[in-house]
Image (cartoon, rainbow, N blue to C red; front, side, top):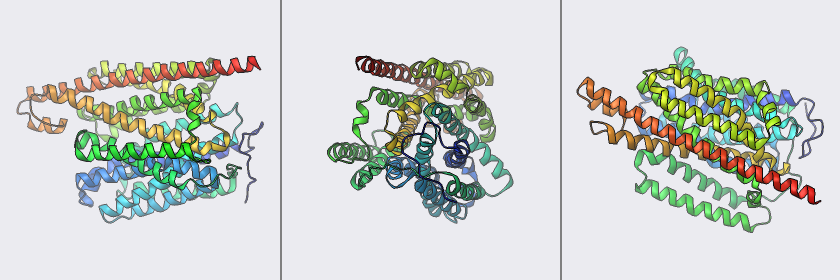
Length: 500
């Protein structure tokens, strides 16, 4: 069954099967997002059954995110040029093949290679799903559609550890990857039958050098951020990788400014609406990514929950996001308040949630629950408004590139947040503990008395509080910067309309 091609701009009526299509692409999106976190709960099983060392485990986790984040810009540009439907199908096929290889892997090397292959498919899926959503919905419906798309992101974050824990409780570790196969197969059939083709009608020439430079530069940058906490920010490995990233990304920016058909049009950054949304997106993911990474450690190391229990206690955040976005309430609030106010309000709530967790977490789960609910409400309001601001500031023909930028910012901000807030925690923690150690488990193992162990836990809680407060400031700052720039952009547009 074939579907008609779609023009690059959203029609006044939208695609007749747009909500069913959104369900299909959100299912594909959810599968990719689950694999960002699902592997974490399988670490003990992989260590035992494959004889994986700590470095192997790190590469199993990082190979997926490194390849995926490095290819987002390239994948989005390819979708615009060659067709978003084609790239969506290719992403599902590659993701399915990678999942099969991962589930049947017999060694750590095979699993790392399979995870890298899954990252290629994941990059194609993450960019094309948002780009297709922008094409099939009218301008009026786009905020609600993006809200649902954003809710699936939150659901994927929360459901990964839960699904992984359930699967490991009933099957062997390979099942957490093989469960992707029927979803990928169903997705391919549904995309072929339902999703219309759309692409940039101008047919820009491929920017092969730009694609190579962006992939190398972003991969090196993310690797430097990931490696910093483990190897030290001043280590030769981290400094060398960061230098490669700086040189290559500078060359990428220079090249993109010189060619007639760039993969990333740098003129986008002259748009205040785009610049404001970009600044806010980096800071929001910086604060949220780092804070939630630290929160999982607090739930497990301080409050004593296992991985599955910790996942269940973080789930209220995702549930709040899902309810508010799937019901359309967040889109209605944004329509009434306007984008700048919505982003500011959402990020104030998120910042307040982080402060609640930081100041009340030592008293048990109640303060954490309040913080998670506040963060969930803030996410439901701010994230879709931010994504819509980025995508609407970019011509519809470049929707894939816009989705690539949005995804790259999320990966960059999250990785930077984990690295920086993790460094704040470790600095505070190591300054307060009574024994010499680089981590909480090592410090607890080196503590000889109950009093020393209590002091170690107290030091970790203090470091966690400081880190969460830094994250709260980053989120609040991001909200104010983004709202201010977006308000100025709207005022400038009104003045132009008035002058005309």
